[in-house]
Length: 237
Image 1 (cartoon, rainbow, N blue to C red):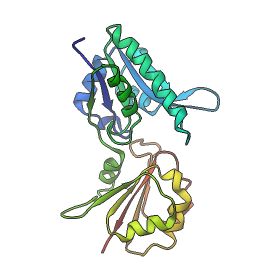
Image 2 (image 1 turned 90 degrees about the vertical axis):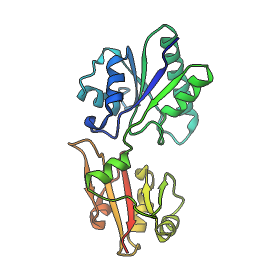
Image 3 (image 1 turned 60 degrees about the horizontal axis):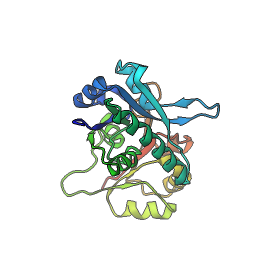
């Protein structure tokens, strides 16, 4: 076959942040696979599908697939294998397939696992870049992430509040992904961090009806961190 499967990065939630190349790929696709979470009533919720609706993409070719939000990676691995099998079947039948990813598909994205499975089967996969959530968050509040010789560290796991305090002391800009997993550790750190450390807290950036931002420690302490939340932490000397 002369074409490949395309992974389209949708950005963090604002449909206008998709690239023109990504939008054109969506419009040309026969089937679009979107990750989703399964609600308690068995229905599926997909942020990717919501973005496609805002872009005016027809729902007729959209296929939702579950991605298990579980610490046991076996469940997610099974989901990746299932959707890879479905994608491969439609690809071999001659259909043009797009797999969507929130944010950027190369930055902590489940689409990478699906891509690996397809590539191992000899199926060509291309990836279209997108805007990662932390980039959109910084832009929304005109926050600089780093400049000149400043370094940045992306954190996706914390063992303790002491670890976060140590990283802050190193002077780098910190991006804390998956903040909801470490809510108690963040709040413990907030209470003891020096005054010149700024905690920029974001929820649901890109979703106009849900997005929230504050750098006030008292406000952050009162929030219950949702799944789509992150922090940019900077020391202002």
